[in-house]
Image (tube, rainbow, N blue to C red; front, side, top):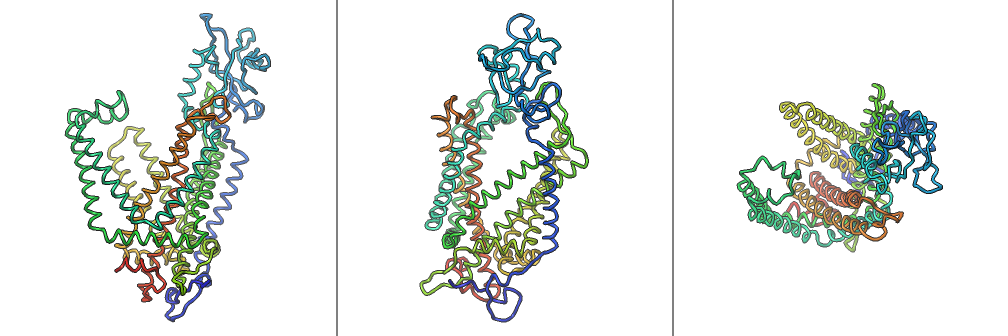
Amino acid sequence: RQPARVRATMFGHHEDEEFDLKSRHHCTDVPCCVLFIGCLCFFGAVYRSATADGDIGKLYHGIDWSGKVCGVDTGVQDRPYLYWCASQSVSGKGIHLDTGKPVCVSSCPDGSLLSPLFNMNAECALVSGSLSQMVPYKTVTLLDRYCIPDTSTEKGASQNIAYQLNNLGTEAQEALSSLPASWPVLLGAFAGAVVLGYLYLVMLRHCAESLIWLSIGVSVLGCAAFGVYLWVNAGTLLQSMPVNSGLQQDLESIKGHEELATKIAAGVCFGVAALLVFVAHCLQHSIHVASLCVEVACEAIFDMPSLLIAPICKVVLKGSAFLGLVYGFLLLWTSSEMTTGEDGMVRHFSPTDEQKGVLAFYVLMTFWILAFLSAVYQFTVAYGVVEYYYTPYDDHGDKDVGCCEVCEGLQVGLTYHAGSLAFGALLIALLTVLQKLIEYAEHQNRDHGNNRLVACILCCLACVVSCCKDLVQRVNRVAYIDMAITSDNFCDSAQRALGTIGAMAASLGILTGATFIFSVFGVMVICLSCTYFTHHTVSQGEYADNLSPYFVDSPMSVTAAALVISALVAWSFMDIVDVASDTLLYCYTTDRQTGHGGQTAPKHLKALFG
C-alpha cells in the first residue's frame, strides 16, 4: 500500500517535503504522563486495599441481632440468610415475629421433614431467652437472602416483613435480581444492537441524505400530530389522566386555564414544525453536502477493517472499566465503619476524614480514567482517519490503506501521547467533579428549605460548568485530531484547534447538525428494536415460568437494562461517524490553511467549501 505522507509545513517547517505520518510522532506532555502513572499506582494501591477490607455483601445481606452481616462477618460466613424468630400471637391466631432480633441461618425452612430449621432454632432461644416460646413456621426465600413467612400459611406476618423490606427500597434489589436469570436475553440484545449498528453504518454509507430527510419528515409530522392532539383535546387532558397521578398533581397549578395553556402548547408544536420545514428548505444544499461528507466518513470506516471493530471494543472496554470502578468504590465504601439498626436491614456507613479523602481521590480518578479511555479512543479513530485522508488515490481512484491503522493509532497514542491525552482527560474529570458537587449542593438545598436565591445561584453555576464542559470536550476532540497530524503537545494542539474551529465554524456547524440528527435517529431505531425484542422475549416462555431457572420476576427491569445496553452500543457506532467526519473536515481545513489545496481529500469535502 502507499503510506500516508504529510507535508513538513504541517509540523512547523518551511520545506516542501513529505514525511511518513508515524515517523514524525514523538513524546509529548511527559510530566503529565508521569503524574497520571503516579496517580494510577496510588489508585491501584487503594483498590487493592479496598478489595482486602471491603465486602459489598455488607450493602444488601441481612444483619442479625448482634450486628453481624449474614454470610459476610466472622462466625456467620456459612449462614447467608436472615430469619425472624416467631412466637405465638396474643390472640392465639397466627404468629408474632420478633422483627428486632433476627438471626442468620444456613437455609430457609421450607416445611419439609428434612428442612433443618423447621424445628425450633437454638439461636432463637438464645435471643428470646426461652425455647418454649418459639414457634416454627414455613418460609419462602426472598431476594435469595431473606426468609419470610409463607403467604399461604402466615399472610399477616409475611405482609409485615414485606412492608418493612419495601420501605428500605428493596423493590430495586428485587428488580436487579431478575438480571442474572435473563443474561441470554441481554446478550441477545447486545448482539442485536451490534448488528443493527453495522446495518445503520451501511445505510449511512449509501443513503445518508435519505435518512436525514426521513428524520426531518418524521420530526415535522410528529410535532404537527402532537399539536393537533393538544388542540383537539384542549380543556380535557386533566380529566383523562389517572387520579392522583404524579403528572396530574404537577399540572394542578394550571387548573382553570387548562384550555388556554394546552392551546399555547399546541401552538408551540406547530411553530416547531414550521421552523423545521423552514430550516430544511433554507439548508437544502448544506444538508446535501453534509450528507455526502457523512457518507465519505462511513466509506473511510469501511475501507479500514480495524475501524469497524472500534465501537465494540469501546463498549466492552469502557463498560468493563466502569463496572470495575463502581465495584471498587462500593468495596471502598463498605470498608468504613458500619452501624446497624435493630430490624436486620438498616445500615449506615461512617467513613473517617481520612477515608473521605481517599473516597474523593477515588471518585476523581474514576472520572479521569473513564475520560482517558474516551480520549484514547478518539485519538485512535482520528489517527486512522488521518492515515486514510493523507493516503493518495491510486490509478483506479481508490485509497490503498492498510488494515491495522487503528492498532497503529492505539500504539502511537499510548506510546507518545499518553501525557497529552491524560491532560485533556483531567480537564474533563475536574469539570465533571465540579458538576457533581453542584448537583449535591442543589440536593442539599432542596432538603433544607430550598432557598430560592441559593437555588438560582447554583442553577447558574451548573449552566456555566455544563457549557464549559461541552466546549472543552469539543476542543479536546479537535485537539486530538490535530495531535494525530502534527504530534504537538496538548496546549499547542488545543490552541491551534480553537483557531481552526473558528475558521470552519459554518461547515462544522452544518456537519455537526447532520451527524446529530443521524445519531439521534440511529439510537432511537436501535434502542426501540432491542427493547421490543427483550420485553417480548422475557414476557413469555420459560422466562415467564416461575418454576424455570430463567424465570424473570420483573420484565420491566430487564427491558430497562436492555435499553441501557443498546443505547451504549448505538452511541458508540454513532460516535465513530462523528469523529471520522470531524477528522476529515479538520484535515481538509488545515490543508487549505497551509496552501496545499487538499490534493488527497475526498471530492465531497471540497464541495462543502464550494
